[in-house]
Length: 288
Image (cartoon, rainbow, N blue to C red; front, side):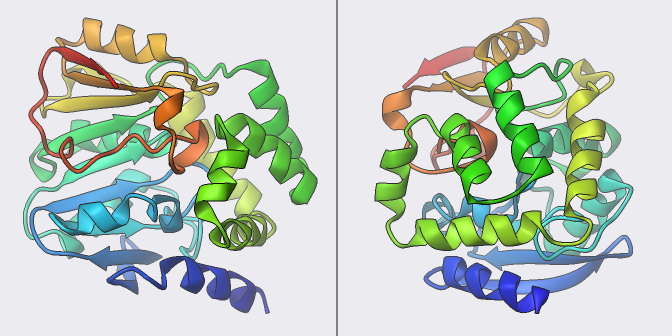
């Protein structure tokens, strides 16, 4: 019964995309992974409480240029729980990428990607960190924190609505753009949040790759680009600016509210564009 509650909305969200929704073993973790496209490999990592479906808004453009690998993190979506996310990611990359991929991570997914780049520098070509957690201790806007705690304690329509009022800069506009997909997305979020073990998996991910900072992040040797929502309530823009100044530059792409057209994790923005993926890191700031 639970599986059918999860499968139906997931299938609907992925229905119009030229991708395969596969299952594979990665370091002993039964992992759900969406794969499609041809070209240089690109791995997308979602944030806490998310799944591969978080990226559906940007997948069509990315699939035109890349082999795109989009897993559900352990304990999220349709993936089984797992303890060592770095080992899990190493196994996933080895199984799905013919060469070192660009890895794009959102919020806690960005912290996982950063840790992976430190431990396996030859297994990643570039990093794109989107509204990354783990660069400083997690200290979100109080209203965001309250909404997140309320949803985690009691995941239902009202608390989901309140959380998304904090996640998306313009929730009403986002709903309008998604059309009928919004209700499907909402149903999938609630089904996942009430699945057995979901709260524990989200808590473990945030604790390890959110509350704690990524040690020695300045030793990352691959090019790094930063993508940040100007109105991010989870990790403010100054975190990205400080990181770039401390660690020798890299592209910083700042997304303003008028650009918000979709959803990538907590910031509610859709900042990733195909022209940016894989672009060399350089000392620059691009305010769109």
